[in-house]
View 1 (cartoon, helix red, strand yellow):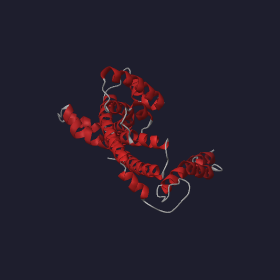
View 2 (cartoon, one colour; view 1 turned 135 degrees about the vertical axis):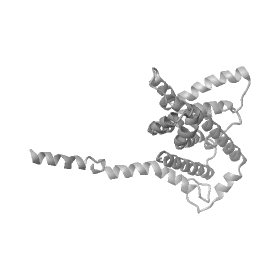
View 3 (cartoon, rainbow, N blue to C red; view 1 turned 45 degrees about the vertical axis):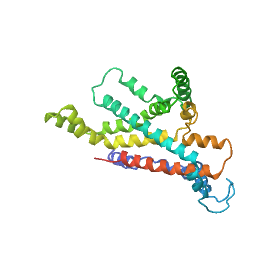
View 4 (cartoon, rainbow, N blue to C red; view 1 turned 90 degrees about the vertical axis):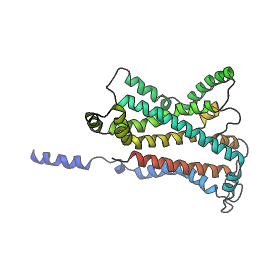
Length: 277
């Protein structure tokens, strides 16, 4: 009996690792190749000197120079940055208020329903959201005669809120509430507690949510394609339009630039969410 008692902790300590399964390394390698090989090919051919997307004709920065000099690309890029900045900023503010309202109060009836509503854009297929927004905004445009980018900002903001909400809420749930309680015990008002204690501690989560929402808005195609009016192409919708005409390595160059920008922002997002205070 004593021997079996002593043997149990050893087997428990070893645990179970999926890496010990036969063929795990092969499956993992195949998955990485399938996922990243097309992206690497796209990046490589963005430096192709010729016009072919399949035949290497030498190294050149020709297509990057052409993309930078293209006025349509410039306009679409500036419009994408403006839209993503506006939508991410407004969405992050709304997400911050929602996170505070759902984590810094006592449990109340309907809180689960609020969670579901906040995360609804993540669960509903994007095409469904796009069609619904198209119907609503088309009626509003006919009624008001107004066709500015406000519709795109509203649509992107609604879609960005849950992406900003999740890291902010996670940050608030892992914070030590005793610091806020101590500040209140020292006669600090609610606003002073929020400004001097809660906000500085939750700031990494807010910045992470802002960057994640920015990337989501910057890369969006489906909702933008359905909601935009004439002359409101963003960089992704411009690229989609070009793919329907003549495909050149210029599209590869633009895609590579977006890929690098997104990778940098996502890396910063993970660094901020891993940060401990």
